[in-house]
Length: 195
Image (cartoon, rainbow, N blue to C red; front, side, top):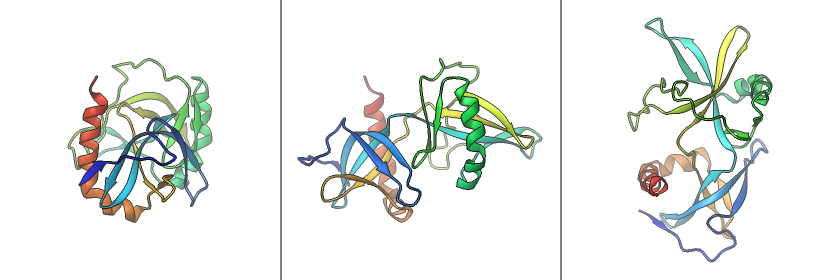
């Protein structure tokens, strides 16, 4: 069961922390939104300071329509990064190759309801399509790509060490926590959305 954790350690809610991905050396700056205790281990729910973004590729679907598919492979993102960065700079946004996800620094344009994109396949767990804000599009080797920012907050669950400092979870640790994540997410989103 996930419970709030009372902490007297060095990290406090609302504080900025920097997570480092040991495999890539990339970092991401976040604020601590909540402390949690799950099965005798302490965790922190973090919110990136810069805006998370995703790159999508437009591909032909079975019904001859086009569908957007997220680009998730690190090597593909490496190839597309400089082009996406240049396109976003035209809007005074700085694309960053941060840990866990891509982020942009700068003020996003006002949300254009008509440009909002909901064409993703529904999430297998929630059956809801992800709502995204269109930022820019570009071509690479005659293939169309687009950059979108999720409208919902993107949280990162981090494990706290004995000094109460957060660390990224491994893929195995995330898998072990899957039964608890939906409950945590539902509870926190309800609180996050309430005035």
